[in-house]
Length: 630
Image (cartoon, rainbow, N blue to C red):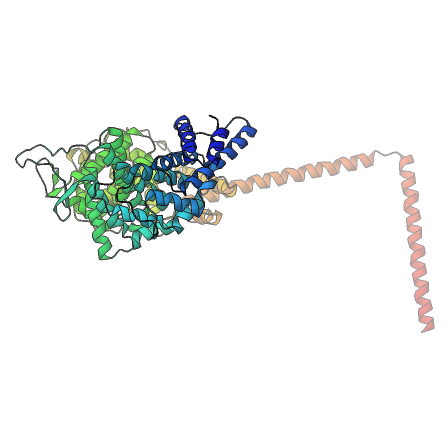
């Protein structure tokens, strides 16, 4: 049955004929996700037929239909809504309201009472259709906001403890809420403030994962017994795929509504809700899913959300009591911190999409180390142990320090800054210690940005650490090149055998070359300002620097000036000699002229002299006439 025949059966208005036609279409198109045709005319005709079929299906849904016919209409709408170019029949307020009623999330509709035994298949198909429509069309998202669909979804999420809703209803409720909050700031704000979204979704995540609370901020798995006499770490059973899928949708929604939580002030109530959520997220990090891919994705969403929480709420990562098999440091449970470090190194070794996979964990470790002394000391022990290898470059090797130092010269600015910041914090923001572990060349970028190229220490509240210098480092300390951060092989001195004047002369040549390149705009010389930051040098600065050269160098400059003056004098003398030779040549040429050649010249000279005498006599006569008149 072709599309035109299906439309003809639908237009008859008969439920049985429509049901057969729609079931045929749905069976044929159930795995179709692309509706484009190669020919433009066929594509336009097919699009018109699809829009007509969608409008007819929506019209049927507004009638009192048998459940089987309702389900067939919703399946057809779900299939048609996969095509973003043909969702026009579904984005009107009437169509969205009809779909939301069948999904059971219509808000404030007193005329439609909730069914005692709702048909879950119809609810799921309606939710899938709304998700497709909102994914492909922003107008539909605006209509969903006007209809307050997010309020209806939140109302059903509060029934998370009831068994009447299966996995698919709960999953697509969460998927639709994610799509709405991802595209509309107003709905994010409404869910966060009016609907108390953090507490609502935290409770839903708690119920989804089946957690219990032995202490205020300590989470455990309900029904999992722990042997207190065992020395082995507690191994929790992996979560099922259905639980992980719903949990990840919850984490994504929470990420949407808390994206600015760490950049604003939070009150006590919000801080308590964030700490409660942080404790759940810690348990998520320490848990696994059914499959490695699911586990990594689950941990990734958990880390992204942890990075949104206010820094003061990250102390929940260290609050659980030390148990058998836990990693203890300074009396604190470091299981979560160690897991973050291992995850970060795993993503770093993989080397793919470091910005998306590694940076969230690295940023989280940096901020945790900045505000928690125990975390910083533990991470420093792991990442920056006492330095023993002073013969290799800091970036050479497979230790985690070497890998992070290599990142400090990454082409991606965010990656290199984050890696440098992490190591700088582990060094208590001490410039000398930072250079010791990374080398001045690798550290220069961060130090220049902080205005610390002159050395010193960045302001910060850090505890005192014990001396970490090893015997190997103390012995080689004087031989370490601070730029490369290792002991270099002895190189021949390029100035060996040169006198002090020659050395000063080479220095002056270098200054002059810098001046010439700067004037040509080939390079931009820089200098350290009084505040330790880099500032540009202009030609006047170079001249001033040259004028401040010691006396020995001034003598060299004077000698250079004298040599230049001598060269100028010799050139002028040579030019004068050439001019004198030209004049002599002219005189010689004049001396050899014949009497015939000189005669016209003599006659011309006599005529000019005669004219001058006549002019003089004429002037005298005019003066005499004027005197007589007077």
